[in-house]
Length: 200
Image (cartoon, rainbow, N blue to C red; front, side, top):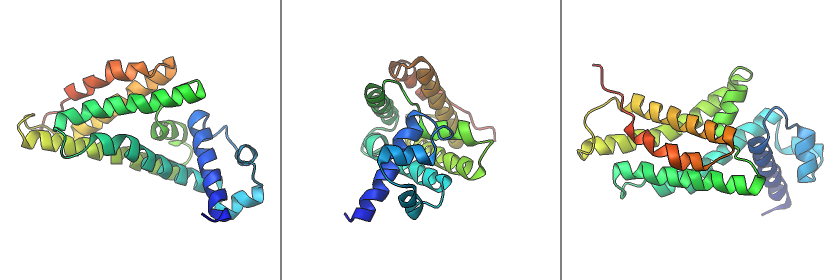
């Protein structure tokens, strides 16, 4: 890696950690630069704005979550409903590690940004929604496979996946409020019970 690549990645990694464990609004460019030990000139050489950086941070978390959760849980070789069990376990592992590292559970990076910025910044709202939609798409595939294999009867796949996503986001919010990632293990499995019937 070149020095420029190293510096850019350092800024991105620093911002990802700070946004996730504090908040987007409370973390300014100066604080990121201080934590990363880079100048503001270096920051603006790589990123047009704090918003531009935040968009890349969300993409960073998409890649991270795909690697640590999605690619382990939502494999076609795993039975469809078992995928949700593995997802819950991996989500717990992810949040437990964050809690052990930082002393508190930071919650979902996409949900955090959506709740904080949905009424403040349309660009960040749309990006957060897209990240959550991508997660729901894996739920949809698992539900579709479950129907095709006879594990589930017919249901509204898209609405059911959205309801499951809403539930697991709520579980993470409660676990964050109580600083207890163990709630993910306790409450998470109930997402498999969520069903939205077809109304057509």
